[in-house]
Image 1 (cartoon, rainbow, N blue to C red):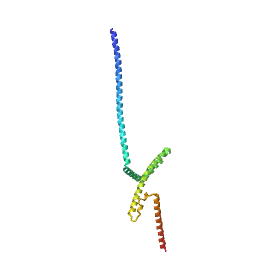
Image 2 (cartoon, one colour):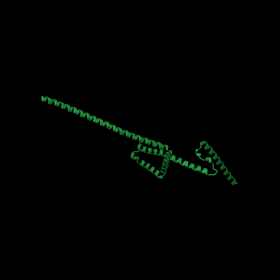
Image 3 (cartoon, helix red, strand yellow):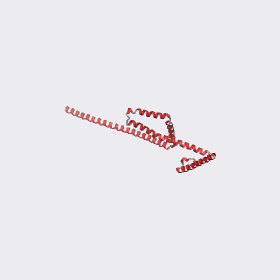
Image 4 (cartoon, rainbow, N blue to C red):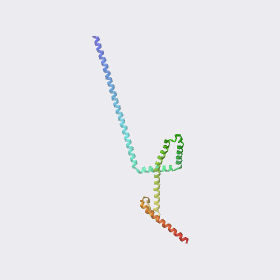
Length: 205
């Protein structure tokens, strides 16, 4: 009788230990799942915060670029200053000597690279990019100098008594109007030469 009771107790204890192990395993899995859930939520919140910050910064940058683009006076002033400085620097003998030195170094390194296509591509790409950018700088500087020269000529025409004020702002006229004025002044020049020739002929007599 006692042996049967001991056996029953052992069976219950064994079942209890097994059930307790299942409960502990279940709680462990649930805790791990819960921790992973909150970790993902936190990571997602941080990720959303980072995305919102990046989106906000990108929006601010875009608005600043649009504002700068609309502010043509500021943009033109910066480009004008950059073009004048670039034209002055590239127009000096130091810039030419530096370019000549670069070409000399490129030629010397030719045998080291076996005059390969990559070696030729380096100088071709560099010169193409520099030439492409210099076209805009030179054209801007030339336009600015031409405009300044035209203003000075207009002021001289305006200040001289008896000058034809119709010649002010002459560069803005159409091609047909320029042809008429050119023909007119060519006729005046011809008459002036004829007058000079008649005076010389009268003095020779």
